[in-house]
Image: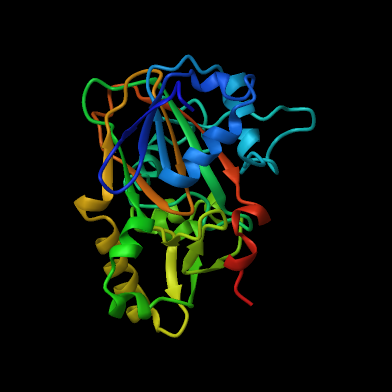
Length: 293
């Protein structure tokens, strides 16, 4: 990797990578180097990339199966299209209702890991900026690996070895009870995952929580909510976070097993579109140990 320059994004985690276009890692046979950087740093930034949709998909498939939340809605023969996080209402089942579409975007302002509510959760998000707003619109990341390592043992003992339940509608209800009732947020039953995800490559542990979480084994509803809020507050302290202000062509790749993220507001009249591919965690990524008996 002598031709690659690795620059820390923050003291706690993350790295900016330069020296080779992101789209060249697979054709050049160097994906293993990229994957090793992903495992080590948890979040990778590549600036000013010319990443086509085809290259975006190729990169996603190298990490694992492409997550497809709309497989059940797609007509026979209709191809998968890369999801977009956008206020232009071009790729959302809520696009016929501008009010709900805006509320759904606002739910992304909550700290979360993607797809904790799905039968197979996400391994990574690979997201690139297509259209950026003039003001606001940053994406923030928080390392639950760094936070877990720094967490007081008394707090860790309250959650270690317990299962946490997640449901898609929970995060939406934090924004709007009306939004939470939409059928798209009730496609999947609640999931229950181990509170700590151990990386099988390097043994690092990370707290596995999200805005979709609502119950912790051994605690009642109020106790669960208080504990989850305390854990989230600890993990999202400034020393564990990185904020990225987008430029067109920037690509962020982060480990959903060990990194939370949230969007930041921007003037809604300004267009903003990010193309986002999530890949699904597999057995090789430590998933079996996350399933609670």
